[in-house]
Length: 208
Image (cartoon, rainbow, N blue to C red; front, side, top):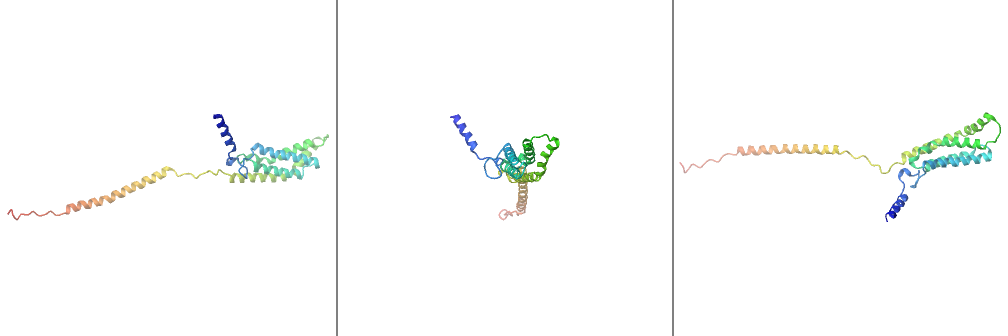
């Protein structure tokens, strides 16, 4: 019976809604972990680079479009608590995939170091505006998510008890003083009234 209850509790925990810092940019589902977002951007961009080099021997529109879409999808689908990696990964994704694809698919030949530098450098420089634009978009989306996705259960700080207790004690003291001040004149008036009352004359008619 105890094992059955433990299994049911584990299933209930797995089906529970994710917390606010585990959600993507939209919806209430669980977002991708940081490594999932990195793999998404690297995998799609590398595949697009291979396809583009096979079709036209250079990194063109297919590579650029897939690179932008994959990096933006990674920053949107990642969990809010894992934003840092997808925010700063676009330059790394671009450099690694572009250099690796060009080196792997470049025609074999003895061209020397100069040809190797041209093979690597030309795609990097020609696609630099795409890399800069993608980096700016991902950083902007990450900053927006940091400011918009916050803990909904945050409460305002409660007032300290010392201030309330000191206020109540000062008010009670002032009330006691005012009450004592009001009672003293009444006592004085009563005492003066008792002293001022005249004595009754004694009846001497029968004794004389």
